[in-house]
Length: 220
Image 1 (cartoon, helix red, strand yellow):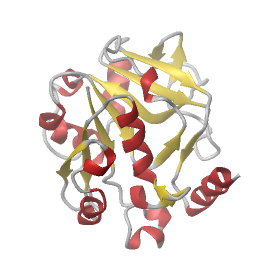
Image 2 (cartoon, rainbow, N blue to C red; image 1 turned 90 degrees about the vertical axis):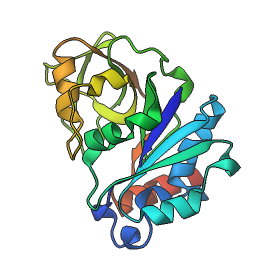
Image 3 (cartoon, rainbow, N blue to C red; image 1 turned 135 degrees about the vertical axis):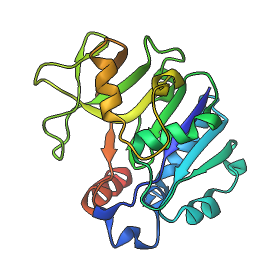
Image 4 (cartoon, rainbow, N blue to C red; image 1 turned 180 degrees about the vertical axis):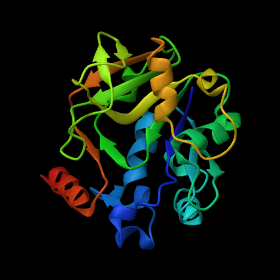
C-alpha cells in the first residue's frame, strides 16, 4: 500500500510564516508538521510515499530528500504555480500511486489517529475519516450514517483530510486543476463512500493561532 501527502497549498492565512517556509514544514513540537505523517506511515509499514508540491516545492524536497532517514522512499509530484487543487493533484500523481487503494493525508493537519485503523480495501471507492466539527467549520462536510456517508441531513461531521481511495474513483477525470469535494459528493450519492468518526486529537493548522495552540498542547 502506498500513501500520498498533500503539500501543495500556499498557506495564505499562515503568512508571513509561509512566505519562506511551506506550511507542512512549519515546526510543531520540535519537528516539521509533515514529519509526523512520514513517521506514522512508516510505523504501519508504508514505505512508498508521494508528496505533491507547488509553493516552495524545492524547499520541501531539500528538507525531506528521498525519505531515507525516515525509512521511506519519497517521490515528488510537482505542480504548476497555484497548484492543481486536491482533485487535480491526486489525479496527476496516480501513476506514482499504483493500481491498489492508497492513503491520502493532508500535509497541514496534526493528529494522533493511527493509520493502522484504515481499511486496506475500502467498501466502495473510498473511506474517509471524519472528526467533530472545529470552530472554523461549524457546519461540517459530510453526514455519516452507520458506516456509509450519505448526502443528506444537517448533522454533518468534518472531513479530517485522511482517507483511503481507489484509483478507479478518478477514472472519469481529466488532467488539470479541480477540487475533490464534487467527486466525493457524486459517489456519496451512489452509496460508494464509507467512513468512520474519530474523536481523538486532530488539528487543522490553518492559522498561526491554531499552530500556537497545537504547540502549547504538545508542550504540556
